[in-house]
Image (cartoon, rainbow, N blue to C red; front, side, top):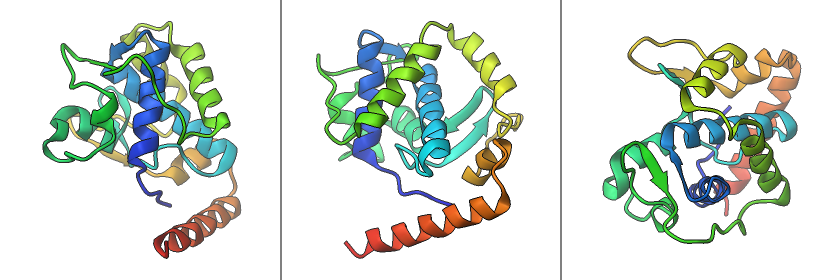
Length: 183
């Protein structure tokens, strides 16, 4: 099961979370919040906000393309919506470029989900958050010094979805991807 990365929605979701935190936060925390929101969206609606690939890394689950945007800046993705809203990292933190955070590409539910994620975890120190996610996210596996892929089906299995329900969702996802490809 794969989703297509949505650059604009990802940038808007990240900007909204940064706005909630006063405009800046450690990028490791931002990535965790986006992961948690994507995970809950998958469980609630069978799709994600970002469409990003998921990986287990030493400090927990990560959104692969988001980490690349942060680590490599506009060198790899110069036209990314990310860079219109979010500054390059400074001292392991990212910040909003503007005072506002547009959410016009996000549904009301997605914005509410981001708000709930921030309200639930926004008070936590980044290392306490990492420790908590290692304990509560069964799909995360310690990859040592590398990265280990997390499949969306792993999350669904961890939350007791049946193989039949996972297969149905996967089939629906393939059909939607095909229709998207037609324009």
